[in-house]
Image (cartoon, rainbow, N blue to C red; front, side, top):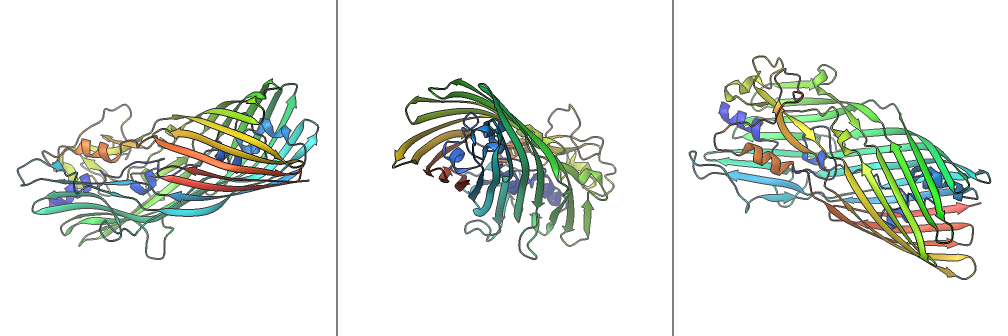
Length: 496
């Protein structure tokens, strides 16, 4: 039974399928955190986010402040967005026909859990206007990260919770379950200024960022949990977070150059620096038929980490080759590797099975041959395409049809096991990846790679309409559709 409990500890986290972005510890639900780093507003969204060289509405304050000078009247902007999430979490089942045979991945009984969630949010609000002929300022509020997912209910898997892993080893069975409702938001309060000299324009902005990071956002008694079971042995972890809620400062720098006025050929570039926050984790472990123990950042620095919102920078070009038809192309680089900073492993794995029971005690004594998870994430380049065709209707009214596409490269967190010989709950710097030969014949490393495999590329198709009613009112409607993350935006602008 002792060895079975060890197996539940060693194998439990092998199957959390990584997704759109990363968390700061090994969690399937957190691995699907979706960053909304695309430029705000309905026009940008409808054009696939290819907006850096255009930047011709109030959302330029965040998209590229170098375009603000194009706003020649004071205006108020408002944009709301509805997010739909349906991440795919892998569930893997390994079995063997007898205790002496090898473990085999069972593709027939392996399942995929797709919890769905949606949330509406005020995405952008701004006031912008000129202070001279070629200089415009703007103040705004924006949401550049919004994620809410509920993993309590499922009609196909274990009644109500996500079953990440099942290892069938007759006569015992080991499972790993995860459940919880996670709610994460970053709200940006910013001010930007942009100006033009000749064909060149530039802009800068500063942001105050307020992050909420809630692992127990569900109803009373429904906390975030990771549950390991092998028969009557195992444990139930209840986890929560505390966060330094002070506002954190970031900045934006943008530039834009007009190559050809007639064909509206412009190039632009922007760099957005985002901050990071200190996050502490608390884990209360209830051993089946045993005592409970609470570990927290307040008492143990090994449970302290950071959340670093990735920086990104883009360059873009736009042109109007024929009257009323505009094409735009952006190349964006997102520094997702910054999310790896201060990754906090929650479990400790024994490389030597004889030392296994000491690897997760409070003292950590006598466990020198041990391993922990380390998060690995690649920076990615996103190429965005967009087009707009405008039709003049009546006197001063414009109707615009827009469409776009971008392919979001796989940038999920890949998790690997590395030695932790000094017992600091961190992977040893420069150490090579290790394997765990427990139990014999089980492909632990392969199972782990199947669970946290870096995700998949995701195609996004965008479209929308825009209308300008005289010089006073403009609005935009748009949608961004993909297999796991879909959103719709409505923007309204009132000019004075």
